Length: 360
Image 1 (cartoon, one colour):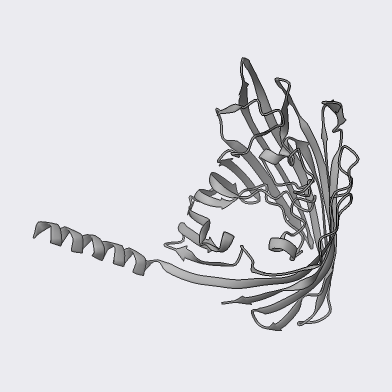
Image 2: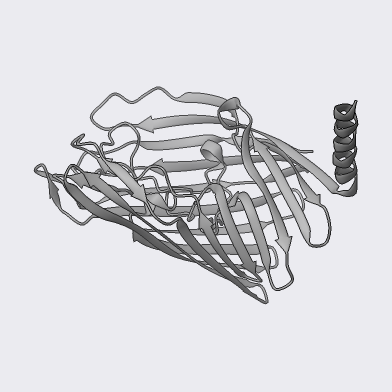
């Protein structure tokens, strides 16, 4: 009997807490429909392909307000067709600042493009944004300043000789962002740092990743633009870049290289420019371009020049609002992996189609 009373009391307490909180639910469903034509050197070109799929960032979630000081949020996405946790955190406003505990966007996530191809990539990986992911973290916010202690990146290095490596982390990934707004201008600066030990047989070396970025955005009536430049060393450990086409690649994107019992750093630089114009409440236009380049601190590996690899992407789109919360975004663009470091041409994709979205 006592156990029943305790259980009922616990349920009553939970119900009372849920009732006291303000739950504001939201969601959206997104579908991409695209035709893709691939230009592949040194191999037959694949046929033009049509693909229709649920965009992985389709979501359902809620903002939760317990009090003026205590809030929270959860959000589930549709990655791989399965529900996955995108966001799950609580935040405490202690007056001088805010403390967030849980999974949230990392401070290094600087965006400015609305490209919808692939999974609404937004020029992600092609210099278009410092695309850090959502990750477990402890974050402090003081006005426009964010400081976060973030879960380390699991993928660490490229090991082309198959020597086998183990890694040791001692401190979390550190990220800082500061945003400043004046009139119709917004300036955002961000930086990240991660370090760990790589053990290769008897060799023990440090791999240090760091990156910096500056983002500028402005709005002038119906016209807006954003621009970004970013760079660093071994940035694959702190944000996403993409210089390999997935077919001809042998060395990954933005990671240090393990070769001949040594660690070779990989430097990167990228940037984007996006301009947009809104004609009316129904129709707009946006044009964007992003460029990404990586370069190893060694020019010859196994007799092959690996000095540089690069990629770019550009697009034009016409966002259409059919009704409040109902959108169609036709888009035409190119994803170009350009020439590989050994002179082999990589894939160039031309695509056309649209994103379809309903918010609910």
